[in-house]
Image (cartoon, rainbow, N blue to C red; front, side, top):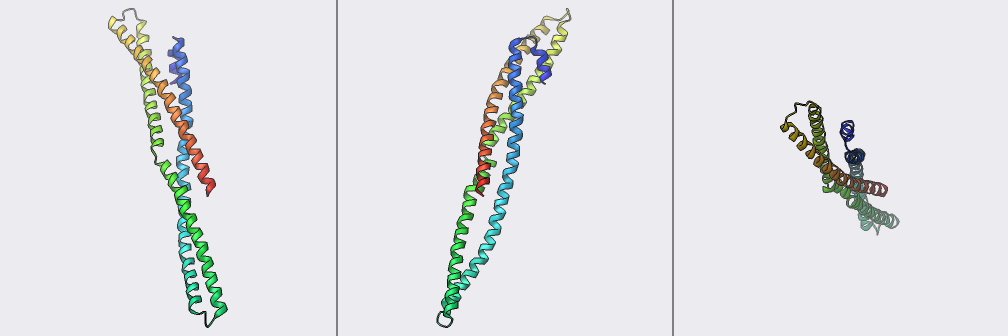
Length: 214
């Protein structure tokens, strides 16, 4: 598309300036789209890894707590007959109950502060909104490309001296429409770039922070 725009833009300096800005926005959006897509695919891997750790730890915690409860029960029931062993069993069970309580708190923290925020961002409105803006921007660029092709075709025909007045009017109308489209494309490109840049920053900060918290 850039080559076509340059051909048309060579007829007007203002058009050339708009084309350069639009091309830069397009290149930036391509980079942002790739970056945010990679982050969107990487974040679920973090969530799945943490969820697997939580699940495995939960199963281990259940077994250890059962052992700790049995030790405490044994110690309570046998203090009179097996004093030293009973006290050791109670101490062992109490210590492990305390350890497992800390592990339970850790697992809850991982769920609340790592998994849930990442899930929210993966499925959140900012991601979808930014991608919708980028999608409409691409559609608008396609409209510009189609209009450029139409104008080049009409200008080629305009070299024919027998060009009718109606054809001249259609050419002028197409040129005016192109100017509007290109102006809208630059404006939407600016908005889409800002949205994707903000999204990229949020994703990187969230991913780095949550990954370093594990």
